[in-house]
Image (cartoon, rainbow, N blue to C red; front, side, top):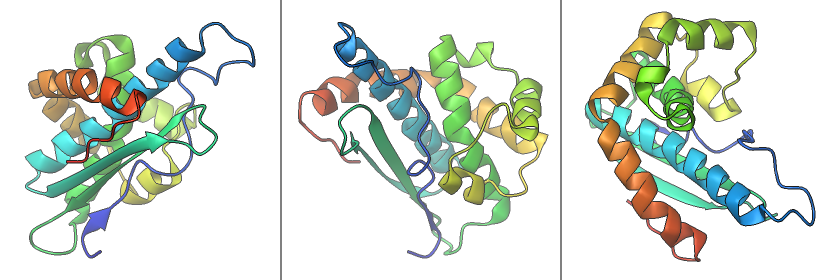
Length: 173
């Protein structure tokens, strides 16, 4: 699909690590992974919409059932997604997920995220890395600024979508 990106699918992030066999917290761990995955995908969608793109989201359980995978397809109306749009879109999922796990985008510093990505302490999925290729501090800051102004949307979508997905339903936008 021309101008489309699928930034969330690929290398898995484990926030939290998968539950140990027999763990009493399997449901809580699964819900936390789902929430983080949704925050990642919805965060990318929020930034894509701010950039004038059309979006399609999907989140589903991984075939092994211990975590979730998500995808945000973004299509720019002009065709090919310009690099000045793709770079912040590529980092937006990670930034959104970090903000969600920390409780607020105000708890995320763009300089810190940029430095940790550059050092390898934080990693983008293969798809996100491809989308964000050549990203700069300005791209991280842009994604974070968009997320800060639209944070209630991320929180509301995670809260709305998680129970539907967790209990076998599916919601596609």
